[in-house]
Structures are given as structure tokens and as C-alpha cells.
Amino acid sequence: MRITVDKDSDTLYFRLDESRVRESEEVRPGVILDYDKEDRVVGIEFLNISTRAPREELRSIRFDSGE
Image 1 (tube, one colour):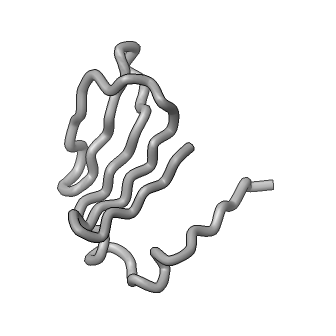
Image 2: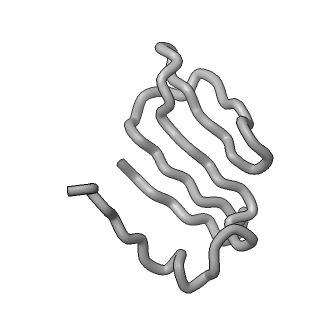
């Protein structure tokens, strides 16, 4: 998995695997899912991330494995 924050475009992107993106769909305002040829989600993009999370929280990401 790869996580990218683009300050210029104000986006946060989670790339789940490196499959080729076949289609993208905005499922909610500012939330875009990328699908591969098998219709599996391979990426999630959040637009206008600065309005969704404070800048301090974007400097580090905490992972919770649920265990």
C-alpha cells in the first residue's frame, strides 16, 4: 500500500495495489474510488483534504491493525 499527500492539489491518495486503473468513480463529493479490470477497488482519493483534517494530523499517519 502506498499513501500520498499532494499539497499542491490538496489531495490524499491511498493506493492499495499496483493494478492498472480502469475506471474511477466519485462515490461521494470529494471521494473518488479507482477500480481495476476486475472491478476491485485499487485506490481511494480524497479531494480538499485540508478541509477534512487538520494539517498536523496529515504530518503523520497512525495505523491500527485492530489486534
